[in-house]
Image (cartoon, rainbow, N blue to C red; front, side, top):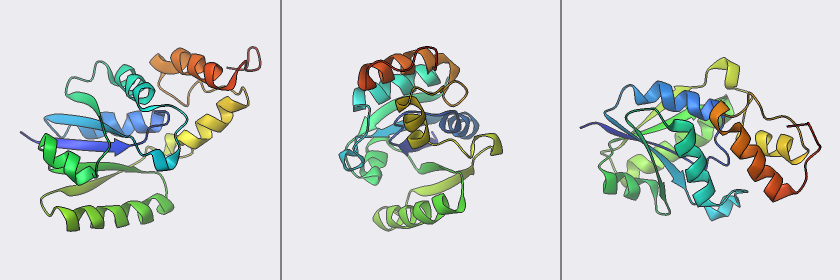
Length: 169
């Protein structure tokens, strides 16, 4: 069975993330979206919230499952039997960082390959940090995040930031 992991912090999931997940998942029998605990990044949403949003956003994708990890990615890959890591790229700056990470992962486990998926041009401007900033000021996140989690995400932002500008989101 071919198993791939698409790791990330997903704080929160965006339409760009979902696009990469949908497109790449067709090439594998089992596709695991792996949410990194990564406390060093100081995520806005806790791990359980991020896993919940990803599960909701990917419901209906037959071979896609969501899990979380707090170990080295290659150790998680070994645990689930994955031989591929999928990373989405929006810009050249993404490539520089992801290329270095791919080399580190290759050095740690030569049986795991990293595949890069170019972002759909319509999503290259979207990042989780941009979504967080827009929402923190009461801006509209519609079109930036998966449609089936917009309402849930807005509710979660209101809970984190307090009352957002009425009608803005």
